[in-house]
Image 1 (cartoon, helix red, strand yellow):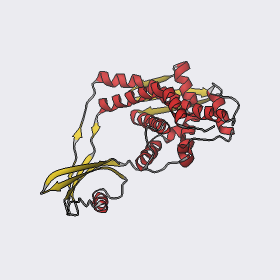
Image 2 (cartoon, rainbow, N blue to C red):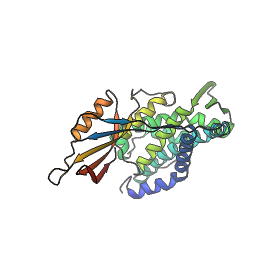
Image 3 (cartoon, rainbow, N blue to C red):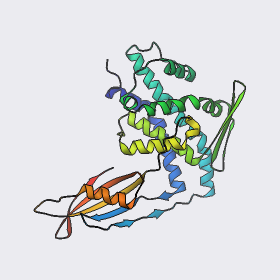
Length: 291
């Protein structure tokens, strides 16, 4: 019996559909309230020195009432994110039970964590080819359970002034975490990305790898593992204008990479490329390549 096939992915997608929709909504709402900068645009002429670089900035200022709403949403955002992590590992256990690797899938969080810690399980290809994703996600699953329980069962938390603070006592020891919106956003984006990759909605590539490591670095206090030292990647739109030569448009992609490295040295740059074919200096055809 095949594990993690398309049917299993569809079952998993359906299982997490509500929580994933909720997190997508909350993260988009936060960005709408807080505003931000658009990506830069670089315009190049094929094989010609010089480039036009444009930066456009849009800011959306949230009202005081809107900010209070965002504060109130922070506990829900935290628990919804944790729930998706739980469903990811529950799905792993279900797939291993299907092939007889384990006998049962418990419903208690601690029992699931214990089985995952002590069993030789088969994992989806994303985790097999990128073990750090499974390791960091499982660290979040293990470390944050007590804080999730505190929010859900005891309401021992506060959410104000853009910070979520949670305190809990376990085995007579006091534990506490404090997350600002940026850190909570990094947590949410990590969970959303991994869930979408596992369902086949989002491919895993250089861009996803850089962004995952960047977000994981921002939440070291949550997973407690090593830092990747991943700088925030820059996302750029590149327009390359190419004149027709004997019916062809010979786009020089090496030239594009060289110009991007010149403009943004010593930083990871992810770029979308639009190639515009010119006939008699007028646009005739266009191709678009996403990063």
